[in-house]
Amino acid sequence: AQSVTQLDSQVPVFEEAPVELRCNYSSSVSVYLFWYVQYPNQGLQLLLKYLSGSTLVKGINGFEAEFNKSQTSFHLRKPSVHISDTAEYFCAVSDQPYAGGTSYGKLTFGQGTILTVHP
Amino acid sequence: DAGITQSPRYKITETGRQVTLMCHQTWSHSYMFWYRQDLGHGLRLIYYSAAADITDKGEVPDGYVVSRSKTENFPLTLESATRSQTSVYFCATTDPGLAGRDTQYFGPGTRLTVL
Image 1 (cartoon, chains in turn yellow, green):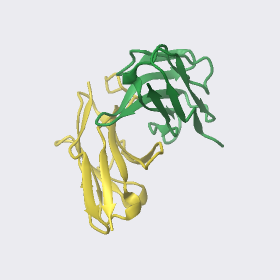
Image 2: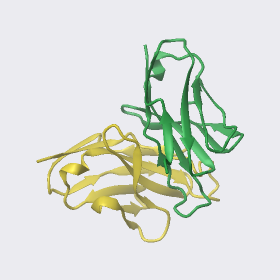
Image 3: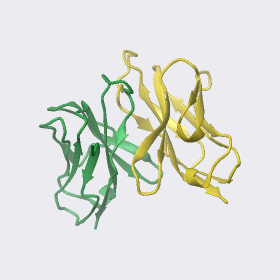
């Protein structure tokens, strides 16, 4: 079975400061990794994803994440945050196809991290 | 192009009543999912469907029923609502055969309160 742990439930930062949201996962097979963002009273939208290739993935709104297979981590970073980045961020995993798992196409989410950017 | 819609957006019901939440997509994606979002738990998968007439349980299926007679619709029914089913429900779709596969697209959510 897969599991995802987001290490911080809330992260407060000041505008223009850097931020890192931490995500660790556990799986017995190779996985795809995702970060989704949820703005207040909205659904989730994809921020970025890692499927294969370069371990540094760039997403929308200046966010990036690095896949570290040895540490089973997929931390999200932004060098300079804006007030509009205030939202809840979710890390998620799914099995890769043909990896031998049972969760291809299904996402397992972490508990979420609320990022609050202060002026 | 509406994409994915959910109705109603807000619902208040009483314990023991049957409630159906609707999800409709205009993309013809093969996979559809129902999640519930609760504080401290993130999103948990209730049921999913890989195609019309094919459904399977997720992590928290008890108390819920789904059907999928048409590709575009995936209703979720609470047969006898309980207070523990108070939550925000999200529908999502994906199509592994398309470019951008493995990205799930989410509806706006339905906020359900069971009194």
